[in-house]
Image 1: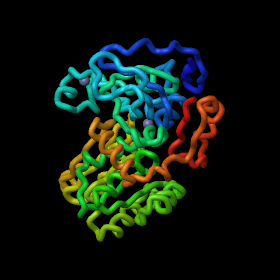
Image 2: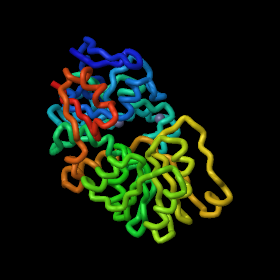
Image 3: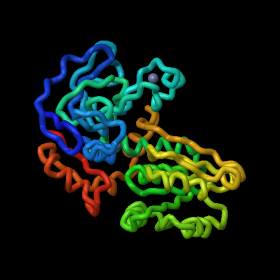
Length: 342
Ligand SMILES: [Zn+2]
Ligand SMILES: [Zn+2]
């Protein structure tokens, strides 16, 4: 059967790979119906994503259908439509034993550290399948993106009387916005790209947006919007070390700062006058938990999360190689491109 593989940075091709064997204990073979493409995949293609190794079949945002189950599998059955939680954890390390399956010490993401879903069939641990019978395949593929924001807002423990500032309105920031809104908190969004803020205002209905300039004017804008208090929760979804270092300044006294983007650069920020004086709490947010997937499936099913603004591009599997450079281009307007599998 056909798979799409990144051979090395900036090189991908269709390859022929064997069909999976019968599933072993606690495994399932799934047919891939839809694959979301995200920044991680673009980074893998360009060679800028630090955790990627090659050759690699990408695809970690997956809507699938179960075709066969191995011995001992009771949670799914052939024919079930599911979302895949693509975070493969060891189940034995200190993190896993504490229930922190999202930050297993030996964590592997499907399609990043090991082969993912841009192929017709593959084998996954059945415990990573979350039944989503009422979701369309493209909606199921979107659940993982939403899970990143869900987990970040969960870490922040945002409350209704608080203000959440989301810095960076790319797909990860947008997913944080969805859950910040569901918490009942007031949401302010900052980004350097006016078109992204237009999307947030027009399609997500967030009135309070700040066109970020990287100057003290940004602080003034947030100060004005919050009556001088600044934001109780600041979510930085930029992956920019400059933005992440500056993010603390937007926090209120007693505020929480959550980093959901990733940088390899060192961060620095004023301690005595900002971190200490305001008694800020600094949090990382990595991947997501099984319960996030369950919750999101329910929210999409009930219509509390509207996926329509999200899925901006759909493309057939056969067209991926030709379409990929166009999706990467500035001004492509891509929020989420979803590959429809044959
Ligand atoms: Zn992704
Ligand atoms: Zn582990």
